[in-house]
Image 1 (tube, rainbow over the protein chains, first blue to last red):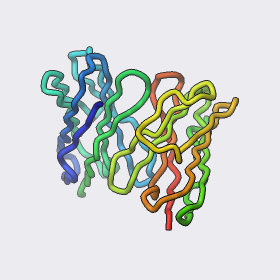
Image 2: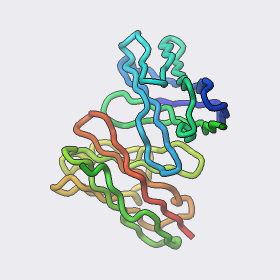
Image 3: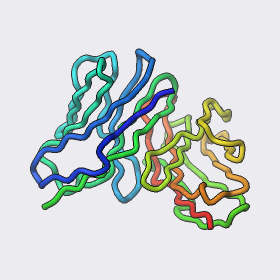
Image 4: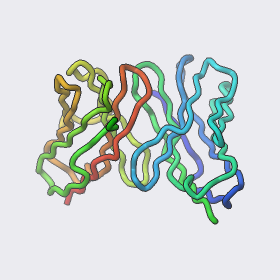
Length: 113
Length: 111
């Protein structure tokens, strides 16, 4: 069974600065996908970024980028130029065969003005 | 184009009762998954429906059951409610094994 661990319950960052969220996972699969989701107070899970395990290049989506270390089973998220709207819960998630997602426990990000 | 819609938004039940939650998938999607998110935790996979059949199931008791209709909408039923069933129930839809789109969830409180 896969497990996903987020070791930072809460992070705060000043507006316009950078914050990095940690995620580690455990799996025996070789082909899989990793995701970061954002959950604002509206409760809807929104996909931030995804990474295919077979790709060595780290994924980037505008101000969001990941550092994928497959051997270390690490998948961190960097939010650059933080904005007030980035305040939310962030979940790391793993997916192998099928469509089942395994989520971590989440990290609360608070962006301060 | 409506996204994933869930109803009801909030509901309160008492222990032992039964509850039905509903989900309409995003237009063009044929697969529906359900997740339980306890307060302060990450979502846990309950089950997934495709072609009106349960295709995958997480570690949840038989009190949790579901259904998918020919129009791809889905229901989650929970029988004999326990206090520990209090949670946000999220529905997600996809086209096959493509990207998941989530609804805003149904908040269930069991008293």
